[in-house]
Image (cartoon, rainbow, N blue to C red; front, side):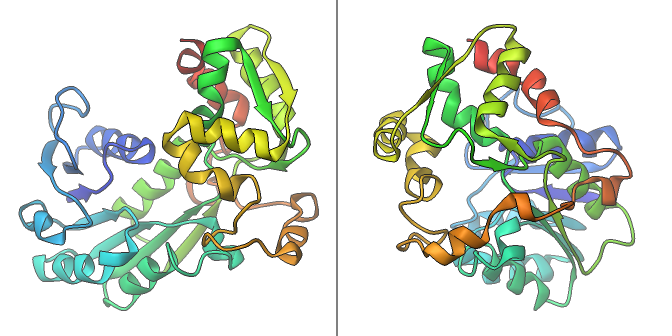
Length: 289
């Protein structure tokens, strides 16, 4: 089977590519900038950008299955091109926010475009990526062994990117997943303070937790740039998922302690979902230096 992975240089995409190669599939990786040493040598790398669908033409030729990174603005055209090229199965990297109803204009339009195509589809809907904490907390941990956060008791179920990749690979390569939307979480409800403690345990070093105001945290994230700056308003409660003023009733309804058991990758893979402690050990060196 020939499989094209878009967003291939990302945290999930790289893991999908590696697994597909290990399983003996012909893998193509779509990335905005082709760089050596990023992918296994067996992978055929195509430069392309989902915001410019015309750049995907060569990458799609002869492809059986597609892992689709979400770009709502061009999703319909990309799906149309994929179908014309002979793709018969599309697995979408979506979001748990679709499941909860918070996402109506980012991931949901991509899901709908794929469903309307008549092709086999599967949606993979992760909740909070554990990797977000590397983007948010990595710089101050590396520089000062400190985390500055306004909500030490805020909690969620961070999911390991390898669990997301495992489910995506199953959906791309196995039968029985068509028409399914898999919501994925980590196996444990963990406060921010506990997450920092687990990172400290992985580093075998002390990390100080400093409680700051949301306004101060926003300043810190904006100064860091990248994901932290892009997501600061949403993560700190200054905006909702769509970038609008937050709805207090929705915030109150989102108390994770009332959720009970949440779906994890185990329902698809048959293996226990990876813990945050394992994730912290897997990324200890990235926090250390």
